[in-house]
Length: 420
Image 1 (cartoon, rainbow, N blue to C red):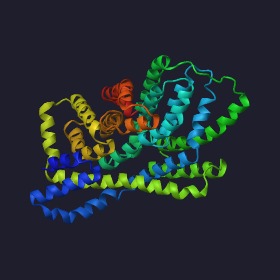
Image 2: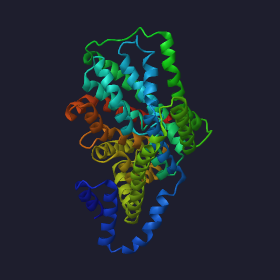
Image 3: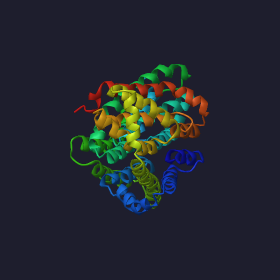
């Protein structure tokens, strides 16, 4: 009954958080367990009473400050001035800039939106087909949830009660492998999608250094985040707070492009976006608690065990299942709903490392951002680049396959998530 009410409410187009709460109430009413309502406030409060969740609004705030102060644009400029003599230099600029931003934003949709507005017009001006530029930019946005910091890894770490710092480190090697694969695919497709635009190879050395210094200063922010977490200097939450201070200093005092008048607007967007995510976590925690009461995880475990006893086959089945789920449900929502159901099966029955399982879940659900019919990243890139959805979906197929290849590498080469 819980599953049917969930599916019915989801088909109405209701926001996922309200679908979860509605399905929970339907189960309580139909099953006659209305006494469970007494525990709902405690479950709800406990779901967000977690210090690690503070990293979510902090990283959202950091991304807003970076965008508002023009720091993201400085990274792009700094990369481009040194690659003007390289064939298809804007392709490399696109991917390297996305790699740098991935270590700041942690959100694929935000990254796709920023880069679609900034890089796609520049690539079109340089002679690239708009649809190719849009597809490359959307695919490069997948680096956002993989390279630390990652909102998906933060949420998984909180739900699974594993170290968020370990989750961040686990995403470094798969993220770099994906970067290399995307770069190879982009160069392979670049020739047929380029009409031979002009390349400015005559930038004076003085101007190059003048553009590089602000970019290098901005790059201190991801270095603070990734380096501090990797070497155990501070926690992910502390790294976000320190990075915000660095961004405010550079944006407001050094480059003077972050006026005080913009801070209320930044805070307003941060509060709104963070509230959406945290309310979703709260609703999913209540829903998961009801599923546990209804013994759904145990039923799922019993069913999967009948299919295979092999951990590798189990992970491959999970990838297929999550790939289908990701086509219809937002990645974060799916992660919150399914982790309490699938993780106990993976760790208890199959002995799979929870860090490895979290990376596989995160990578697979992230791919759903680019797959119809509900791919959020697909719609963002199409809308901001003015490219038809069907055309963009076709161009994204090789990049989606590259992401699936990385997932298979993680499954068969588990050392990738424990590189240090």
